[in-house]
Length: 431
Image 1 (cartoon, rainbow, N blue to C red):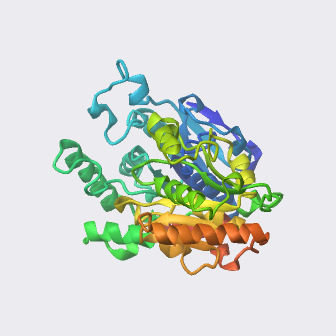
Image 2 (image 1 turned 60 degrees about the horizontal axis):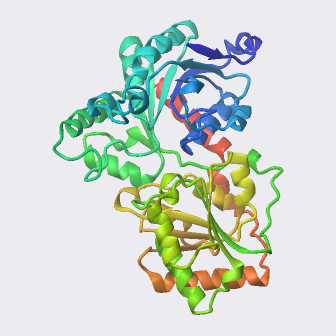
């Protein structure tokens, strides 16, 4: 185990006045492969001001394949981070790139259990921890929390950023893995004292699958944005190009940009969009955007030179790029993502630029619909997509100014959300 320590005099100063929470999170700085790291980071940043002092249990930095050192600057000195060993079964237990599926149940980091549980037990006993909080994915975080609750009796709050079991998608229905993971998920829901999800839709999904769980046991805390990330950020639309930017993972399964590319290609051919003024940028979209398949589609649609695929950048750099986009692109279109909202959606709302969302009816569409600068289009609705693009281009061509922050978006500010979490903690320890 390695230990990242804040100032120990802070611990002595607050021992009697601040409640302690063991905070179990795989995604924690400098890890940066998922926007889920921001939820854990920002909660830990603001919880001390709400009366809770996180003792973070996570993994060694060397186990992370994608990192952003800048995120470490947001960890307050009051937070102590315990970094434990684990193996990534897909990397460390593979032979010629293949590994046994049983070594990844419930996920690739199941070996984290063997180091995290003893470390967590020591922290609980030595630091007078009053509550355990675990956040997934990966689900192993909840397995660690379940073991610690069994061993100590300390109350436990389980946070599901995404579903664990995705019916009809993963694991394969009827498989041994489905049977095992369904039982593990049921165990978590039964034994945790409170449960948190990120949308009302996700809460409804869990209640439909587990009607025996009281509705009051599951609470909703959305993802959000941190106002401090925007304090010195210059926001303004670039006049050089009509640039549509998407930040984050792109996949043909649930974040497929091809309908957008087809619409742009068609409008260029119809002389509705000037090719030399249009740019579509993907920031950190991962491997599919670099594949021959995606390159083929770009070339087929005549968008070589219009579409730009860039590698991962730091969170700060991504915000700087988004702050000068003409349009912020959101992709969320599959049956299994109807209950979810991409974390980036809240930062898009804070920036205030026009948002174009290719999304099915569901949580994301409900968040954005009714806002004048948001265009929510079903991916197959080519006519409405083209109309939206023309409207957006004309607004950019006129030089329409960025919107002022919609004050209703304040409900998604990370410090407020941490206050909601602290309230749940407070209620849970007195149940």
